[in-house]
Length: 113
Length: 112
Image (cartoon, rainbow over all chains, first blue to last red; front, side, top):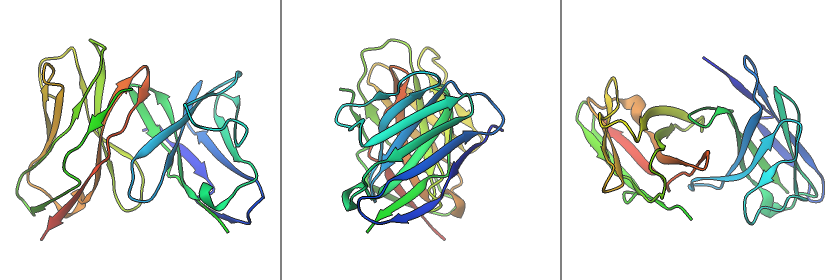
């Protein structure tokens, strides 16, 4: 089946630094990718929809300048957490495919010290 | 905003028995998809089953089946012959405006 690869799986950074997370569709082209955030013992919350060749669409309450999304090719979307702070520590998950059939990455645990 | 309610934060079942997880949702759309996803301790999201709202027949995937009540906006998941590997968080997720909206989740424990 289709595979979505997400890297890194875990990252620890200092407060104030930026972190980039990659999401790749390995065997299909993805014009749209989705980025979610999951706090411990909570559900997945959609952060933004990444569109190849155009600007991402952010959900209400998500700071677009803090969470930069780039979808420069049909197989790669990146999420950059800029000037990360401890409150940004969370599990970030990407997905790709059609809304009726989405494939999820394995997630990235971000810890900001 | 669309709400999705999973009223059972935790459930447990004996191995080999049957368990039903509940989900209710609201939507103004007449045609839509509904999903159940499983998230084991690895945190990898795994599709369990999908239901298309225009289909009256309840979806079935091996030991997993749904009871879809469109008028009541209810979408429960039944797991038959529960296995230890079924232990996970289960999320109900309607598709709205081409986006998945996840419920709060139900943590399922399987007792050997």
